[in-house]
Image (cartoon, rainbow, N blue to C red):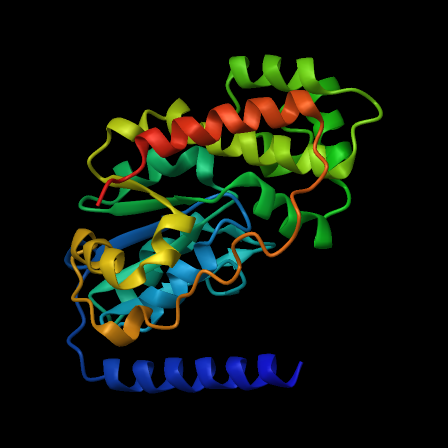
Length: 272
């Protein structure tokens, strides 16, 4: 607990120093700024990537807990142009979690915008999910038995094919780990449903690959985002969170579908 408080205080101090230094940067309009999106299913490594970007003095970074840009973890899009306009950094980064289904439209909205979609093996994602989220079976039930809007943002943008697949895998006794695995599956499927694998504005990156070799991979991420990478930006990244726990008990049919999608993501991932 004490180490977490120290880490949080250090982050706040670093951000304050950066914001003070950026006060001397010339302001420009929305068209003068680079808009960056960091996208992914919850617990897939978006925090890590945003932390890396935040260490650059060329960025203004907005996470889903920031009330200036988000409400209940959802991006308030009406505020985004004003945030970009007011930013003193040349690059403005937003977290995209609940809005995954809208990423292509968001990229179209801001000329020159770019996005990184980060994904992580579902076993570790599920282990992280179930610590805090206990109601995923009910979300799945609502989407299957009522409609795709019944669970809020969770089912938005879901294709008919994904809905049929989810319906075929749902049953009243579905447990929370299996439901969380299904959530990982249908939300990552949105990457392909939006044809982002063929979009040069988007790069798909594998969490495990990047944290095992941050020095070898993050310079390319910064270059893609139009930023200059320095060693200290990503030197804190480590692979210690990979496989920390035993794989969760996930229903066999659900695990099979997740494995297939994981392999498809791996095949489409940015090769460096």
